[in-house]
Image 1 (cartoon, rainbow, N blue to C red):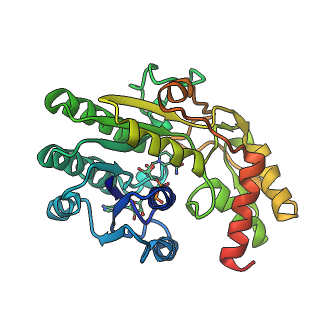
Image 2: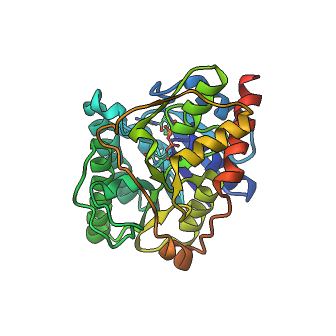
Image 3: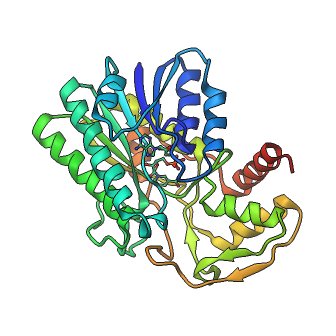
Length: 315
Ligand SMILES: NC(=O)c1ccc[n+]([C@@H]2O[C@H](COP(=O)([O-])OP(=O)(O)OC[C@H]3O[C@@H](n4cnc5c(N)ncnc54)[C@H](O)[C@@H]3O)[C@@H](O)[C@H]2O)c1
């Protein structure tokens, strides 16, 4: 297949492209290499992709409709991952979130309609469950209680996808990712922040007084779910992609300490606005319909991240 992947220089985008190229797909990557976090990490990911057979890269913005149109020309599928992805950054930059996550999404889906692309797979988030505290969260549960601008954006994407499917029969699959981690991971996420602080002898800022639980998903498992969605190309679906296990935040911290071979100084802080205390995905639908089977638990995944981090930063 020929696939347009947006967010190509991003964490999940980079890993997805690696797998698509490995299996012989052709990929057009689109990314504006924004500076929401250190762009040198994005450039490093791109460097590993550039020159590989079947890969072309367009440095451009999804807010530029002409760029989107050009990038989508002749593709069989669109995997849309480009977004502003942090929950907290939205408090200071709400306008950017509305632009990129809502208008940007509209540009993608409306161009899919116009060019009659045969399928759109896009990143949603566990954040859409917002204030709904029922666990494990399943796709049929209520998602109308948004508690962050980011969650609201992703819910909006799901509604737009549903509307476009209804009006134009576009095949759309939304994937609700649950806390993704792994090598080349995002510098604004806990695993990176904690490892970085620990190895630089700074205290770890632990929110929610450490009493939080997360369903942590290793990036290779997420990629397997994305590829399966691309291949199945259901008419209209939403899937939770998590590990299906609820882990204590402090166990995550313990594994980081163990991998780094030292104990952390910890600074316990209250919950941040927009955050949820616990997440857990019901992944039975993805298992049944995508053959999704997460393989990596945190005891194996956290050391892999720390190993990458040390090698990459020469520590
Ligand atoms: N990582 C997670 O835990 C997680 C969880 C839930 C959902 N998601 C979603 O998965 C997707 C990928 O996330 P990620 O962790 O790889 O994030 P990321 O920030 O590493 O990747 C997103 C990429 O999109 C690019 N981008 C941003 N604005 C753009 C624009 N206007 N035009 C073109 N490119 C633009 C960025 O430069 C970046 O490289 C996002 O949609 C995110 O919301 C991620």
